[in-house]
Length: 479
Image 1: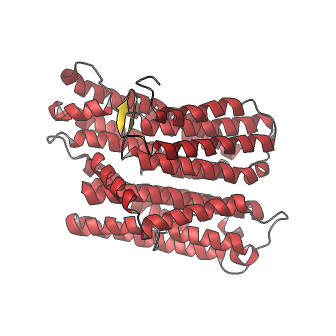
Image 2: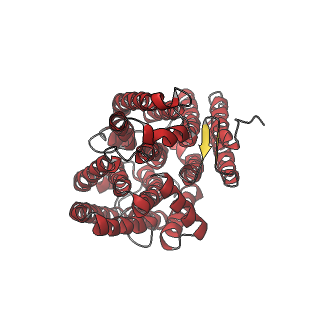
Image 3: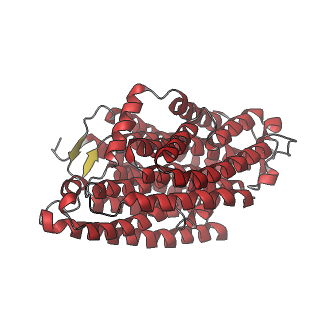
């Protein structure tokens, strides 16, 4: 194997090869099964990568920061593909749209893996742009006016964001050029090594553009307007990967640059800007939850809130703050995708996304109703799930070192938890609404939901020692 080719590259190349194959496959059932097979192979490959040593090889790096995100991404890719086995037939795709959907899905999976693995900041930017374009295609694949509008808003707003991120990347390169002479000027490892000798003013400017640019894709307020539309109008499976994967990849890019700035003692602390956007996201999203009447938009606003909470953790910084942020990213990915799987099944049963039409699921569909209720409670951050553990760490860190942040953070959490419990009761309890004709949700829906919830429970109640050590090391990498 060539020296600069790492096993991790297969996490990128396998989905892209699958995308080429799926672009030419005919047959709804066959395409869904091949999509599932490619995703299963990607997940197995991610498990193999666990045994690889942490190192930089060419344009890629494997370290404690990206490994847990890669594993969760591969898992969600697999469970989303499994979910699609039973869900794709209800999307009523014609042959062209079916090919576009599956090809875009695997293109996205490969691109987000590259975004997490890239050591070169330029390659990371390209990967996130490819993931964005694939996401836009999936959001608009139905071709209805609301879907086209959502895809167009997604494309325009995130296009502006990615342009700003590119400008920030260029400025970051210019900051290091006098020190590095242009050699490895976009390597994260090289930039971090020389950051202490770079002009702090130029580094500050680069971070502002990168935070605004990638913050748009992470759904941070005030750059969030695309997210509720995108998650409400695309195929339901796409809502799971947008919340669980794209937002994480964008925030991961911000963390890489934050770590670079953290090596220079003269910069304006990047944590301050992250904390400001994080608190704004928490407060705006928490109160916005009470005004949502569409189930998918409700959970999209919940994604904005949770990315804000993760940003708060990284804004607090240090070992505890960074650990809380990382645990929150992982817990949110697992719980939110489980909730979207359940909501998607409920929407298929009722033929509506309105919260008022989805009530009484525990009475009409007990297996789905109880699974969805537990998923909503996990998303709400109730014990013993991972989001409760991360939010407890956030509040403890705020009380210890950022007392002024306890009030806005606590207020946002209380308002959001109350809204989610209220919606959970409305969705799952009470008098049943009539279901449309069709089979009850089977293992392709309930299996992914309970698997994600079991992992979220494990992370929250009994964090295994090796995982705790890995996340602790990742907190150090994040700066």
